[in-house]
Length: 333
Ligand code: TRP
Image (tube, rainbow, N blue to C red):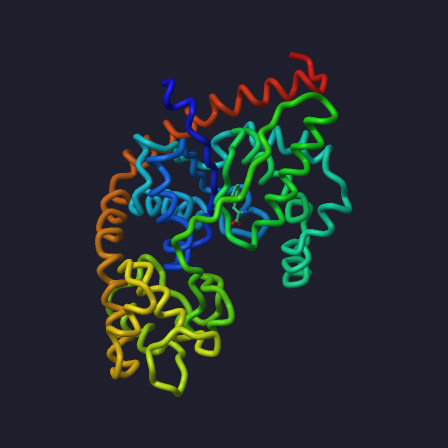
């Protein structure tokens, strides 16, 4: 227990909007499972955040379980980490309200994700989309997380969480840990296979742009064969060769080989051979994940029990923070 208390705490979340991509795996989830040894980790399926976009209820329920099952399949171990579903810990929403009263309209208006999403979906600029960063701040601050692994697109939200935490601490008294971003050294940022200037995203309209963790071997091979490269024909990482560099990054992330070694390995060989090799290591990496995913999904009782235990454990920590906050702001106990 002594040792546990000394460990830094990590919290991260992922939205249950469909299966994760190879980019989510290499860039995030694989690291989450590695961090379990060194840190006290909480991992959350952010189903409340998903509501900012219109969802089909049955699909959302199914995808929430699928996301949790995939996290387990990717190595999140409920004996080491707390794995839970956001909506099953109601204190997040309660804290979110208090934090929203410590957040300025102007601050939220400056969030680039809000500006992008409201421009993209002018028919549904709902208040939740606007206050989304307050809920995310609550997710983080309610656990006094020290470190938050997030992608670059979430840095601004994390910065807001820090500012709100600091403001609350100044207005009342020291309450919240100021969270920091955590960018693991390993884990290349995986780009789209079709337009390598963009990051690999499951919301891409072109399914050839991404690899899903649930893609079968034939699909993976086909998508890599169609991946955009260039006309040089040399396996070499360079800024003006974003497609090939991206494939090398994927190969490197899954084999541990450096870019120079990969260049040497494929010297004098065409892109066809290289693409097949990349597909091969991806297929090998996905095989055990897919097997475990199928096993967990088939055992709904197990999955729901893990999530119930996770929610109870998270809820104990969250409840203590919320009680403290309510007392400080003047709510009746
Ligand atoms: N907003 C994050 C995303 O869309 C998901 C998320 C919700 C999250 N709450 C969080 C990430 C708390 C880190 C910490 O990717």
